[in-house]
Image (cartoon, rainbow, N blue to C red):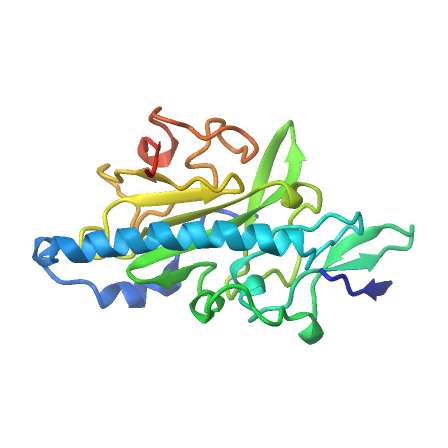
Length: 248
């Protein structure tokens, strides 16, 4: 097969690599954390998600990736938009159609759109100012529902299964949750291609926090296993009975 450069999952595993980072925050009494630190980190997480949403729109419009050669740009993973991992490209199959493939050294985005911290991916996540971030891109549709794939453990997507070219031009979502619940933050946040940041109080008996409990891609969606469904406003559900509302 000849590859054409385009200007362009797996069981629920815990984020084991982040455990060592979590130890840095393992003070015995979370109540000693000044409230203004938590508030600052939460505000920063919201601001970062808004920036990510804007950058995803720019990335798609610029058609940095078009892995099915249909002239429609697709959304990207953190490391792809930060220029630390190759963007996905299109390969011409024997039948003459374009299919997604891993990019090479010449497929790094330059200049990058995301700041350097988001190019440093570990266990498919990024840690920034006391919060953990994870990006999901759309997979193929199965039974009328759109599944999703996280990026590779060290960022980007260097092997199958790749995001679906059609669905990943329509859908993406990103979550942010505390690295150490009660110390670096409390609330969890969400944004997708609609650009509206959502929040949940994250006060269940098993709150989202680094390695102990993390949100799967459908945590904020009305229909389980379907990132094309509406957001679950004001209705408890998901793995933690989370209730989502819009950030003012």
